[in-house]
Length: 266
Image (cartoon, rainbow, N blue to C red; front, side, top):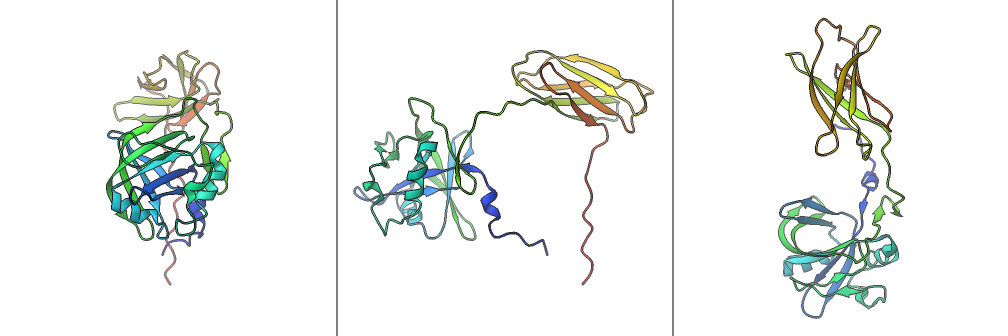
């Protein structure tokens, strides 16, 4: 038997908040907030929303074969809270003056204006989970704001994003093959433009330069380097440096971590 999991472990997830619009007929439109809303395929572009058993929208999507999904901007936090707090059975949420619906371009389902992006979606798959139901749909139209918006983030409470993080450290990993060739792969801060400097640090004193190497087309380092013969490598390390960043290090021997002992017999 596995370890007991905290009941609220799912709240550790971090993601954007979605506003899902579905309709039953020409008159009835419902809007709800979906914490679990994602892109799940690139080509063709698919989006998915996971809806709980209490959501009226589940039946509406199944009846009409589609929905719209707006990924919220951070100034839509109050709107997301409102449409996520009440059911269609309680109130017509489209009467709120904070809700601005846009006309669809391809489907017949309107979409909520003001988000990071709004998507018109045609249903392709429904996956029944133990409690929730996952609606996977193909994106057939997209509506982008004239000015890029900052996303609303859900991690327990709702949050806005701070400034973009700037990477300051090189991270490196290696693989040594039986022929004595070392593959070195590293990432680091973008924009420095300079070469990557690779150095072998044997388990004895001293350093062995392994050359300076250009970036890949993606701005990273991936290079194969012949290892020098007759160098003790049991506890050797590799250092990778780049201008404007803290150097990164890797062990030639993989680190597998401690093994969890099997449970004692009952």
